[in-house]
Amino acid sequence: MIQIAVGITELIAAVLIALIFLKVAGSTKQTEDYKKVMEKGYAIRAKYFKTLLIVSVALIAVSMFYLPYPRFAKGKAAKDLKIYKVVAGQFYFEITDENGNEVEQIPAGNIRFDVTAEDVNHGFGIYDSTGTIIANVQMMPDYINKLYVELDKPGMYTIWCMEYCGMAHHDMKTEFEVI
Image (cartoon, rainbow, N blue to C red; front, side):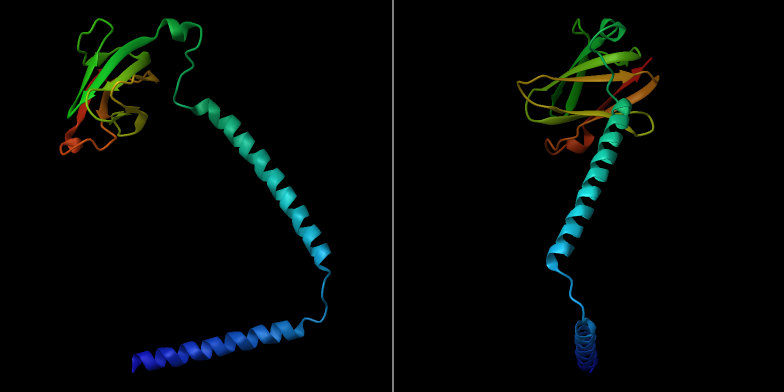
């Protein structure tokens, strides 16, 4: 019974829409030249594109100053750079300093993590104590990715694997403290 009522309602709605369409189409007495309409449309599109381009370039230019990666090319930042090697395997991370000593504390400042994997692809995601992601990079076997970060807030940071790497992937994490 309900299906019949719905079918009749749909049929009535379709007829009403068709009548409205015919009424509007029949009431249009003046036709515009297609060329004029097309020129007007292209002019609007050109203005819209230029505006969109200007706004996009401005937003990109402003946002470049807020990237989380420090500028290491020259000067003090390059001299104060601390380098740590991170090796991932199923299901662990190992962070070592330049001398090969395993570390749990890292001095605040400009850091470069040289990350690689021993077995399969892993992800290297650094999170601060509030759970906000600081940086992320892929860890691949036989390849060293260099991740530059500026860790100036003391506290505990957590590294989570960001790439599914096996059955215990969800437990693959480690922590280090920035002092």
